[in-house]
Structure formats: structure tokens, C-alpha cells
Image (tube, rainbow, N blue to C red; front, side, top):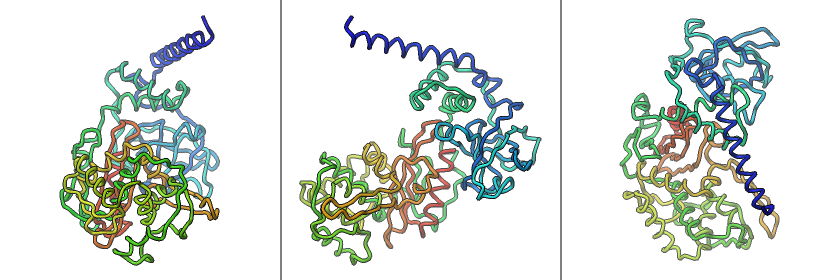
Length: 449
């Protein structure tokens, strides 16, 4: 047997032993039994705790306890305690193996000053009657029976994601969530409590990206300007030409001429370049998508190999192909109020473009830095979506847009990390960025928790 075949043989044996070891661990783990679907009430894990700012109140994020579980947190240094309700997932045991819980800042402040940052705590799960209710959430009911098929699949998902077998209770809780929360997909009824005023947003849609079911909507078929949400379609149309992203191209002042048809250059979002500056196509794509630079879009249209008319025609053809039948583009940046769509249409557009690996990566990049190749002038581009900058939600794609006529527009794709259900959220015509972000946050919190 030659060495390559021998190595392949032992690789197969190793993988088989790895899976067998995992199955043995699953069958031995009490955390996955019906009697122990949640952490035992007698367990008192200790470790580090930090704070975050998500939903005001005595709440916490945990990978050890289920949503709705009440937990007493003891600060070991001061002896102080606070009772919290688990309403979020975290901290990630892979990134923070020493942290057992994260506390909403109001809860953390009862134990130590926010400036302390990280403290050492001990946790004690409480029954519903042990403390006053901080939330209407109730602990999850234990699973009546085990489903080994689900557990095996959950183990495979865990090992694929983390590259190892589970080794502590937090790991097994993740597997438990994967196994038994997977069928707990959000439905229309989960979003009925949403109340969104015209100030919050004129048009809204929440789409199940797996089956295109509308889970919640408000004026979702109303045709309105969509401002820089246009750029998502322009970038996807450009990427479809299969460009070499590392190719160096020259900037031309002519790329600003079309912009002046709609507004003064001083009023437009622009990448600050001089005529003849050289940069990579990649730099233009990032600047257009995360910085919403209008001249970067026009430069990409110029170097695409298509005429401007052909490029815009392909944008419209793509929209129709994706099911956005009420959508129309007359230019590629979004500066024209004649670029129109509906919340439902744009959700279908975002679902389609989010399949592109480059768009997923680029649109969810918080900060991008580059330098022009000829002058070495540094540039720093920040994502226009503050929800992404804050890292508050696990977004898979993101784009903002604003015109006076369009209002503040926001479109995002996200996935529930436990159930793997995918959502598209589009809000159009918010009266301010604060309203836009608050509305989107409310929807995403409902979808992802």
C-alpha cells in the first residue's frame, strides 16, 4: 500500500473513531436527557462575568441556562448578589472560555461599577418562586423524550463549527439547543406583538428567507424610493462580471459627473480621490458597499466592461429574475428618486444577493482600510450600519440608504444561531436613523431570541 493510500486509510479510521467517541459522549451526557434539559438546579458554576447593553433591566446572556431561566449571581469579591432572567445567548464559549455569564449593565451595576469591566461570580439557578419576576419569560419546559437522531446531528454541527468534541457543560448546552430548538422556528404569531408607527417606518417586512413566508409586514407592497439600497443590486451586477478584485485601476473625475445631476458633490457620500489615483477594484467595492460611496459605484460601472445603459439594464433584469417585479432602477447609486421598490421586493433582492460570498463578507465588515497604490494615501471606510458596528446582532448582510424623499432605509439578513432559521428585515421610510435602528433592533430581537 503506497503512502498516499495509507494516509487516506488512517484518515478515514480517525474520522470514524472521532464520530464514535462523540456518539458515546452523547449517550453518556445527562444534560441531554429529558430530566436534565436545563442545567441542574443544584449546580453552581463559577467564572468571569462582563457586561453589555441590550435590553434595559435585570437580564443576562448565558450558554449554560435556557432563555427565561432565573439565576442568582454572586459577586465573590464583594458578597453582593443580583437576580437576573436569561434573555439572550452568550458569551461564546469558544471566544471567552473563562466567562460563565454576561450581565445587562443595570444588573452588573448592582455588583460592581461598569468601569470594573470583568468580575468573578458564582451562579445559582432559581425556581420561578425563588425571586420576584423580572420578566414574563418562563423557563423552558424539559423535553419529554430524547431524540437521538437530533442529538447526533447536533453533535455533528457542533464539531463542524468548533473543530472539536464537546468538553464541558456549556458545550453540551449548545448541543442541546441545536438538537431541540431546531424545530422551534419563528412563525407569524411570534411577531404579532410588533407595533411600528409611521415615524418608526413607513414600510416594513420580515421575511422567512428559507421559504419566502412574510412573518410580519406593514405597507410591504407600497412602491417607494429606496435610496442607497440600490447599491446592493449594483455591486451584485458588477460581481457577476467576474472581475479580478486585485486588479489596479485608475480613478477618473468623470465618475463624479453623473452624481452632479442629482445633488452637489458636497452633499454626496464620496470616496476622497484625485484624478489618476490608483487603487484595487476590491477597494472600490468595499467603499461602495460599506461606505456607500457614490463615486466608487460609478467607477465600478465604468470599469465593468459594460456601457452605463447596459449595466443599468442588467440591474433591472436581475431584480425581475429575483422576483422583484415592482422594482425599477434608472441609475446605479440610489441618488435618483426614480429608483423604486417595495419592502417585500427588496427582501427578495437581499435574499438573492446574500448568497454571494463576497457580498456577505463585505457588507458585514465594520471597518475597511486601504491605501492608493500610487500615492500611498491611506483611507479608512466605516460601515454605515451602526447595528453592525456595535456587533449587537449576527448579521449576514447589511445595507443602509437615505434620501429626503426615501427617508431612512435599512435592510439586513440574519440567522438565528440556535434554530438556523434565516430572516430578512427591511424597514423603509423611517423618520430618523435612531427610529430606523430601534425598529430594526426590535424586529431582530424578536427573530433571534
